[in-house]
Image (tube, rainbow, N blue to C red):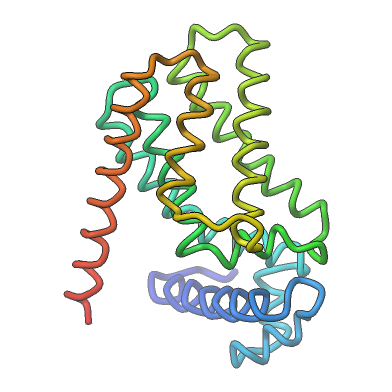
Length: 225
């Protein structure tokens, strides 16, 4: 029986990481339809058999890529938000970070999801992942909301932001990422009947926390170089 050691686990993680990096490069350049599994294996200087060892098909590869790229953002945002008071502030920090990364660092992934050539089943899957996170965040931060109000807020919040991001990454809407994040937060927090003063305070906190995280990340990158 195969026994995985610390070293073998590192080797497998590195191999999987190279495949995901190659997939991201190719998907971003050629789109989902224009990229094959063999293309990814060749770009990663790996074998097609090794690629299928980690991902059973191209759909699984794209899902793995999205999860791998988005998970650090989610984890960081959740940790940063935990230090803020429950309610508008926590929700603002999480949403602000998500929007900012999807139109900057992860812009290529957002554009990939928005492409017509990307199967709708994968776009729906990505939306369901987001919806589940948002549903949990609404329940945690606005537990007093009736179920129907929570579901209506969930639909309008997620749908509006999704459409805004799609139009930004495809060039239909030109605005600064910060402006888009602040506008989306004001619009949606008003829908939750949050008072204006609390909304502005939540947005200011979200922007400050996010920028602090970005500066720390940049400093860490310089130290590693």
